[in-house]
Length: 104
Figure 1 (spheres, rainbow, N blue to C red):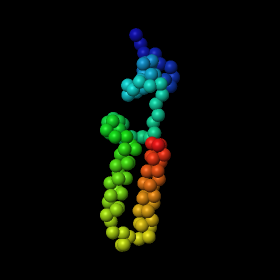
Figure 2: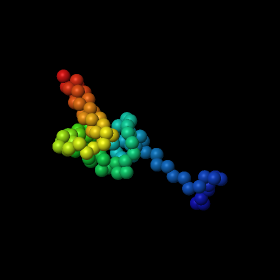
Figure 3: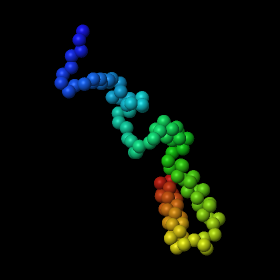
Figure 4: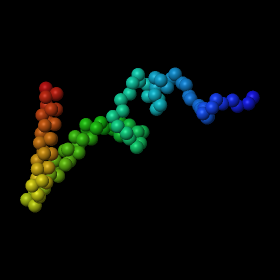
């Protein structure tokens, strides 16, 4: 049988699989998905999120950075650097207050 192509059609192939309408391209079953950004390696990101959520990761970073800042001698810091440290401490206090409001 001869190949018959309409003008400008080229080689066209489309996978029509109704199961993919439900599961999506990575096999996740959902009616919709929410993508909050691009990732260079989504599989690794998903594995990391199985270990700790973004909130838990940021919380631990905040705790560690707070411990480092508490042991710094800031006398040699510029005013901008001191303001950045105070902004960070203020942010940590606001986060702690938000957590307290939710857990009460």
